[in-house]
Structures are given as structure tokens and as C-alpha cells.
Amino acid sequence: MSRAAPLVGILLGSAADRDVMAPAWQTLSDLGVAHEVRICSAHRTPDRAAAYASEARGRGLRVLIAGAGAAAHLAGALAAHTTLPVIGVPISSSPLRGLDALHATVQMPSGVPVATVAIDGARNAALLAAQILALQDEELARRLAQWKADMADEVDRADAELASGN
Image 1 (tube, rainbow, N blue to C red):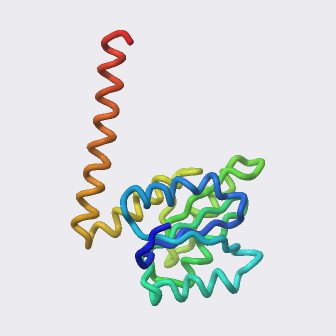
Image 2: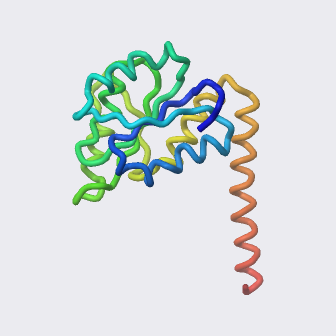
């Protein structure tokens, strides 16, 4: 985790979500975005989830990322208690392989938006959070542009290797 005051709060619905959500905090670390990671359940600790969301802006957080599987109400529970952007990561932890989590996360009622990434899409959630922050941070915008350029370079190297018969 970063030493600076966190700008992004990453919440896991349970400890079992750690491996799927790790790319979120790894990506934010790679981009130099200060963040914190917590476990908070919409169902088992609803008062704590509500308090976290309600207090987030006052603590300096600017974006929340919530990863949860099965009923996956964490992102919506947070969004109900804050005006900060909330990004939901549906997790494939159930027999339905994340389709239940995807539907629970993306099908929010009017007035309570949750941006939703792909099932197990923690890295994209972090990149989306960074892009939101980069609207007011030119240095972060430059780091994101470099990130994309590096991805393109990787594709070009792989293409050249394949074309050369290796």
C-alpha cells in the first residue's frame, strides 16, 4: 500500500476475494496512486460498510472499488452512502461463475450508479479509478499514457516475434 494519503479505497467482500482483487492494488501501486485495502461485507458488516462510504470523502478518498461475489451487494451498498464514484468488480466465486455477481453489481436502480467492470476485472477497475483521478492530475495522466504505450510495445514485440517464425 502507498504511504501518501489514500485516494482510492479498495474493498473486498471477504478475505476469499484477495487473489482476484490483488491486481487492483498492484496496478495502483505501479501507477503511483495512493490507496488502501479493506475487507467489509455488505451483509455481515453493513453498518461498517455504510460508515466507510459515508466517511470516505471526508478522509480524502476520491474513488471506491468494491469486489464481491455471489449476491455482490457491496458496491451498491457503498454507492447508496456516498457521492464518490464507485467501481464494482463482480467476482466468480459462486457456482454461477460470477454471472450472479455481475447482475447484482451492474443492475443498480436509477440514481445509485455503480460503474461495473468485467467479472474478475480488478486490474481494469484500478485503471478506471486512475483515469478518473487523472482528470485533475496531469502527472498521473502521463503515467497512464506511458502504461498504454508500454502495452502497445508488448503487442508489437510479440507480433514481430511471431512474424519472424519464433
